[in-house]
Length: 109
Image (cartoon, rainbow, N blue to C red; front, side):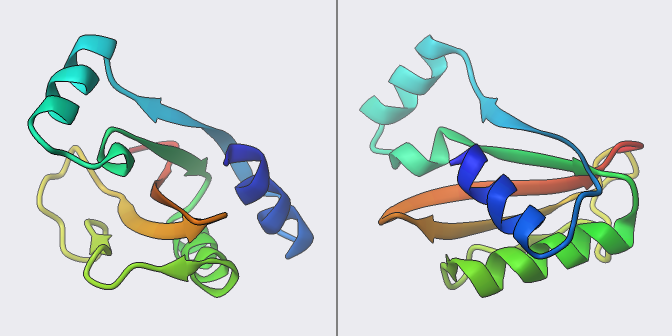
């Protein structure tokens, strides 16, 4: 999934992604959440780190134009700041039939 997202961003001329990786949790935590009925897409996601806030929104636009966004699964913690220590955009999109959670933030956050 990381490679698919990276390819879409590069094809759109955006090479300002500083870091992109899987955002995962400890195995036992993931197992426990699955046992509680959480969806697999809630247990891991892709984290995209870029150099500026405007690039966060640009990346979000590319993702929503390239993949089908899931209604009600978008969170803007940049414009509506819940915490000064955690500023990010979070969305869920469908990639190859699978729900993928994507978190986009700047290097400073």
